[in-house]
Image 1 (cartoon, rainbow, N blue to C red):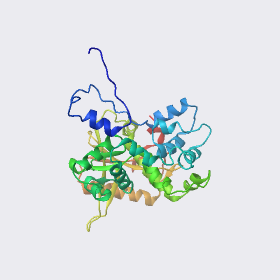
Image 2: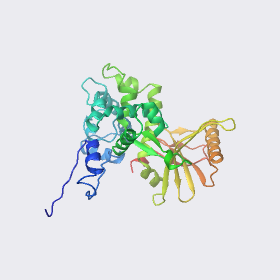
Image 3: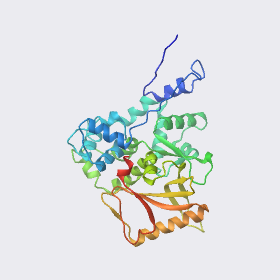
Image 4: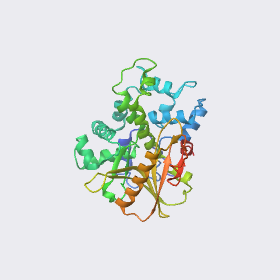
Length: 339
């Protein structure tokens, strides 16, 4: 039949991957184009909300994004005139909230044998730096072999997890990290929290555990917005690779963890120090000493000959003083992530 175009779309990721994308039968090699529809970026989220008459500051949009992610279905539940805290409370904690019990339904609707997928998600939620395939199999207690391969592939293609290569490691040593905002938020705050009225999330948001979690969630957002970070650094046209770095302590050297670094083809490495705070950040003498020591330790452990620079990604920027002078070469804010 001539002039026939078949467009297949849907949310049943497992079925589409198995029966269409990886099909070995009649559809093999017959896909003309594969469109991967990712969640909204921060800029797209802002535009989407504005079209719906919801005008929030970018700080509040980031708060919402950290809890709900960039899924239009979730963002449609936001109510104009309410703050980020109020909306998150209504959507995630009230007995009739859209996302109060969405977690188990979500994975069951998307994947066959969803128990394996959920086990992987729960395991990754416990490890901020991520897990290797071997560690996932052990922590999640899922069968090795094709089962683990399929589960990880489906979760990655559905944007629940991100696979990346730690700096200095071989490609086979890739690490997986949970990047789905709602899953992280659900497992940390919703699952075991009883609804106690409109002030439930207001109380949670004042706790130290929430502030610590915000830094982790902000890191995940930065990982999803590397093109925006590159543009802010003025290196959009430079080939780069994004990594993490982790080295456990030994008898000779202290341990070191860099959650995100950008290695550039122009022989420069940007180490990213990511901080989520409700004001400008000021470096103390102690803070500056720690950053300087970590930079020198990274150079010594990796034996790199590249120029290594500290880049801070904060919410409202860095208040420059004598401690930051000559140490932090670039300061990015949440405004840069909306580009």
